[in-house]
Each structure stands twice: as structure tokens, then as C-alpha cells.
Amino acid sequence: EFGGTVLVVENGAVVHTFVDATQPGGLAAVGDTAGMVDVSENTLTIYDIKHRERIVELTAGRGPTHAIADKHGRIAVVDTRGGALLIYGLGSKPHQVARFPLPGGPYGVAYDPTRDRLWVTLTASNELVEIDMSGGKTPTIARRLPTLRQPNTVAVDSNTGRLFVASPTEGALELIDP
Image (cartoon, rainbow, N blue to C red):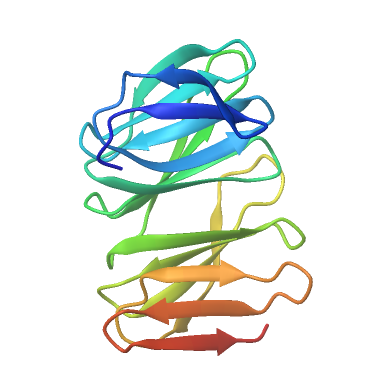
């Protein structure tokens, strides 16, 4: 995160170095395209990995922290300081397609491609938000679940739908079954 570069590694060897980042944070891949959140610059940079080119740098709210791709070829960025989830379409001209308000300190994110659901932790309100990402439509909140205090991290088992929520404050792992 503090190196200022993004490396492309193939078969254990560095084959390219992008040097345009200030503080790389989250990274998400869609095919030969990758989106990198720069947490210092508040941007999402889209790279063509196959051709080793930077495609575009887009604004990513007031404080992006994490990025994740969905099965529709979109990248979702958690804008923690901005209290939102930002959705980007990649296509021929990558751009932001939606801004989804999520007050309560959005931070951790996981995606379940089987159920087409995105899960976002809200660290200030101790919640986990399930977001329906199906089709090409704008995301919608499916439900909110209470969690342990300060849920920083979430993971999902796509086989079962079971959620794993971790808290550094509690020093605990919470399991949530669908």
C-alpha cells in the first residue's frame, strides 16, 4: 500500500510495473482489466493488464478503501469517508454508473457470485448490508443485519452463503448463516 506502484506478476516473475499510484489500496480484476483504488488520491485507476496500459483514472469519492468486481463486469468501490458504494462500468469507456448511499461507515466488502449479492460492513452502525447486484440494474438493499462491534472485514462462502464477519475491536469472528 505504501510502495506507490502496481506490479503485474506472471508465473512468479514481475513482468510490468505501473508507477502512477500514490497509495494503492484495493484492487479488483475483470478479465484482463484491473481497477486499483488509490486511497491517497481518492481515485480508481483502470488498467489493461494484457497490453500493460493505463486506461483511465476516475474520481472515487472522498475516501475509497476497497474495490471488488461482480460477475457483470462492474467494479464496486467502497467510499468510506463519503458514506457510499460507487459502481463503475468498464465497457469501452469506463465510467461511474451509480452512487449508492451507505451511511454508517462502509468499509469491508465481499461478493457472492452465486447469489449475486454484495455484502458491505458498516463499522459505525455495526451492521452488514446485503446489496442485490442482479442484472444490469442499479443496486438495491436486500436487507440489513446487526453484527458484532466494528465489523471491519466480511467474507462469504459462495457454496453455502455463510458469512464471516471479523472485528478488531471485539477480537472475534461472527458466523452468519443465510
